[in-house]
Length: 359
Image (spheres, rainbow, N blue to C red):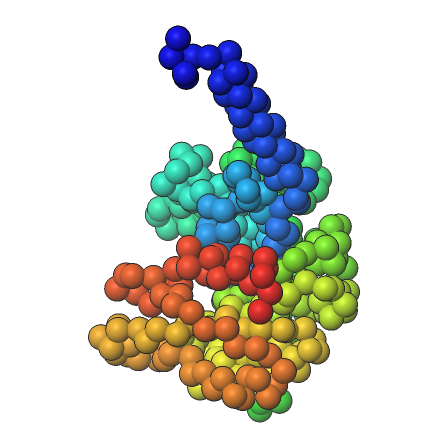
């Protein structure tokens, strides 16, 4: 009889296999016992969906990785384009930024056929022209259900989103900007047209109530990402909702501002990274722990093209940020493309590293 076929060796081999099976089961149980990393991402416009696309790719649990619990918090002050028309003609809350976030959490148009339908925008000059299908669907569901939040939830189920999207408030609000020349500009779409330096912004009515679940999400988060996006028209409206600033100050979550790559004409002309941070602090207090900044210089040719439109790279003074009580975290965040854009994968990778290991 060969040595390998002896009863003793067979018994030993079976014992080894049983140990391996037991170890595998234990690893699975341990992985299931570890809760997902809780991420809250706040903003609007195109910046928030970029962050969500990167996070959605990492949302599903894997062996040794319990995945992510993602909550997107969306500003509700948009009054332009299709959203503005639905607000004026139907009395709807603005669905546009919500739609973009839902699609981002669903994997985007390339992986989800229904996402392509949601993003389809009617052509022409009359009737449905300019409306996105998803905007109409969310508005229709809100009227059918009598509840905008339920409409968002149902839309998320249809798309199979990996996470949830919360409007920051269910109150119809307008953004009001006070300019340095003491004038007031009412309405988000009018602020960038004002061509003046913004002193501060507020919501009208002031301190609208937060949507159910928003403050709880902030208090229980591991990391809260704010931005990137339009400083005054996408980020601030979320922070000005009643209770949000206090929750951000009191939560144990790491609060990270994702810095913009470029200035925005009519809104942040001439502002550097410290100016962005100070604007947040001046409005709602010391709610930031860190700022995630891009450490790679955009291509010179791209910078020249953007300069023709009045957009310039946001300058960063690391020592000044530290003096302001905010830790600068630098990484290559640029997307490899002709336009100057954040890479969603790179941003998500940095945020998850910060959430799981701290600064």
